[in-house]
Image (cartoon, helix red, strand yellow):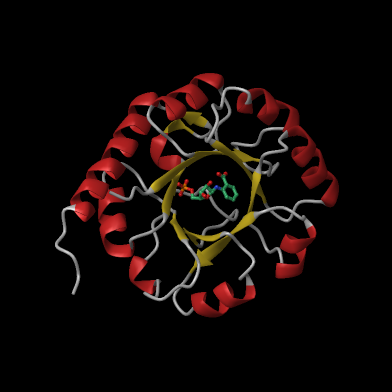
Length: 216
Ligand SMILES: O=C(O)c1ccccc1N[C@@H]1O[C@H](COP(=O)(O)O)[C@@H](O)[C@H]1O
């Protein structure tokens, strides 16, 4: 059975990292965007990332970051996957010289296939709702805006929680799902029970997908 990867984003505390790892998160996101309530410094992210076992990946989230911040974060987290969540051009993303995923802020009329072509060097496209402040708004977008033939792996994001993630997976069939607000008790403070429920819902949906008759 193939499993949908899980990224939990915006962690700021040791206990939250431990809770996410304990229930099988594949990736943990650290927000290096100063205007975010989930912001951490590179040094703090490095402290938290020390709790990650092998095969759980740290992801650094950046919004139009200066080169110095990217550099400092890369030094603090050498194994980091970069998530560009601002207005970075394809050239900006490539300039970082790291494997990266690119956030697309979904709105009616947004041409995701053209975006995917522009960012064909991205490891995946993370699809988020278009919100003020770039992201982390807990807002769901209209999943029917996602074309069926996106050529890159899709990370479904934006307002996911234990109550809607299965529906999103069944409709979109993403490579991975990403959650922040939906597993929080307050901005930047995760809730272990909500993380557990979210991951359980993903695994139940995986089982449901695996039980489907093969398409002919
Ligand atoms: O988390 C933030 O504060 C944030 C700030 C700026 C850009 C992105 C941000 N978070 C990312 O947004 C998506 C959706 O989050 P949510 O589940 O709707 O809260 C996710 O990738 C967060 O990591």
